[in-house]
Length: 247
Image 1 (cartoon, rainbow, N blue to C red):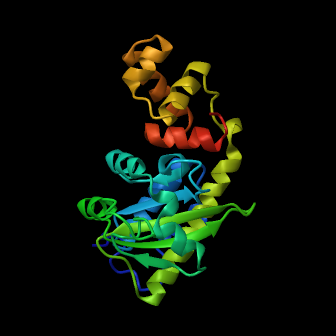
Image 2 (tube, rainbow, N blue to C red):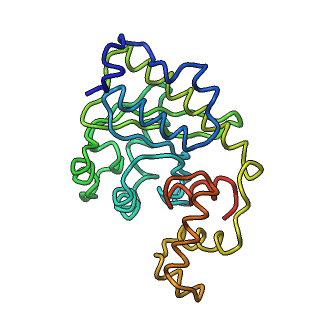
Image 3 (cartoon, helix red, strand yellow):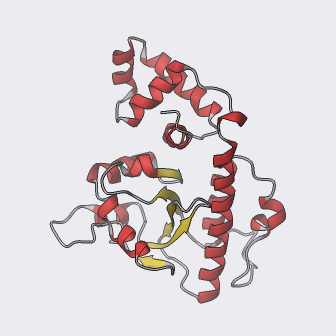
């Protein structure tokens, strides 16, 4: 269901919160995340993500993820399957400039083989319908934008409106890249160490042992690093730190 503020919106029309005037005020990736959440809701979708296009198996799914409202357990479970770089999603968006529609198999491996468990994971989290776009940064770097839920818009006007909204939101996100460390408090060496070990898959308890500090202190470093990076959780803090080349 679309939220009550947007229920009367005509097909093919973007809501006021995605107007040029509203977007001009966006300064942080957290604000972009909130707008993407509202955009997804407006089109009757539940989930969204923006990820760097994978380069073979050099990085995991979570390392390429920039902005998303996927639950942390879903990201971890999909990451453990290690199929993002070989997924139908990646193959299909690379083959066309048009929006890509898919079902629960969109995130599964493109090549036929043993059941990867992706479809079951997607169904369990209501990612049964998705619409994806391949967008490029000003420098030409490719990114994948995906909106998912139990249903996805198929009417041409709605698809076009969602695509245009995605382009505008991606441009806002790209502008936050440029703000970089200059607009953020500097991370301490301990905060960077914690983020680096977390990016390597270590838990707070494991990081505490590695660094010779308490798990409570590790959690404290994560909280301050997350705040400094303008992120909403540890996963986004890691993604922001990687994007800013801090880890």
